[in-house]
Image (cartoon, rainbow, N blue to C red; front, side, top):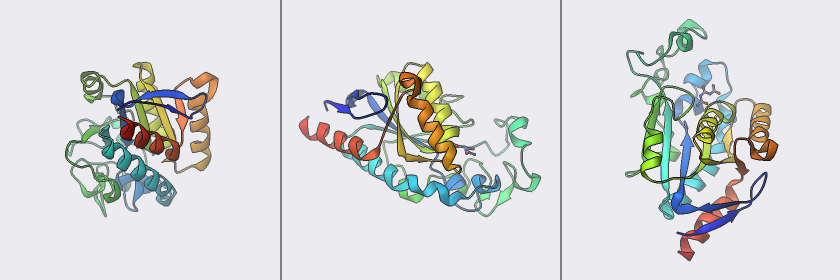
Length: 228
Ligand code: TIU
């Protein structure tokens, strides 16, 4: 493994892949398929599907190059003890977190809707972080895990751009990680929010991190891997 100068906004970024992890945020059936949490909030879940193929390409490249891969899942314990009442109370009562739906209880760990979509199913050796919040650091062991592995850079993709991707990147940025948001590998139920959320990352000299696209990143991972 070696380094690669990634074309990115607001400026190119030197990536040392041995210190870099791919973080795939919440690519779960609950957000991407009909009948889950995303749909219960009134969203058109088909809008998230554009992120699937780019996430698959990033995942394939990361696996080939043996990069650390982390998948996250948003969800709650069956007894809802980790779900703040303020989070549950929102929305139509029949469609709230914990209510039964076509993919099992909405946003509950262990239910069919909570699982990662089949296109991106984790394989052995990949880390799956279950998180009760929007950010992947809140009430999880992600921080310790990244420290143990001496990770400095996070390549972040998944859904949704302005909610769980943004919250995670903000948390990571404050913890000192260089975050690269892979714009075409993220998606939102609101295309305008996606566009603005991506702009916010790289604005002000990269106030939260960097923005790149899948193709040069995948090329860079392959090139660095074959040069090593
Ligand atoms: N509603 C929405 O856009 N997102 C979430 O509730 N969670 C995640 O982004 N994963």
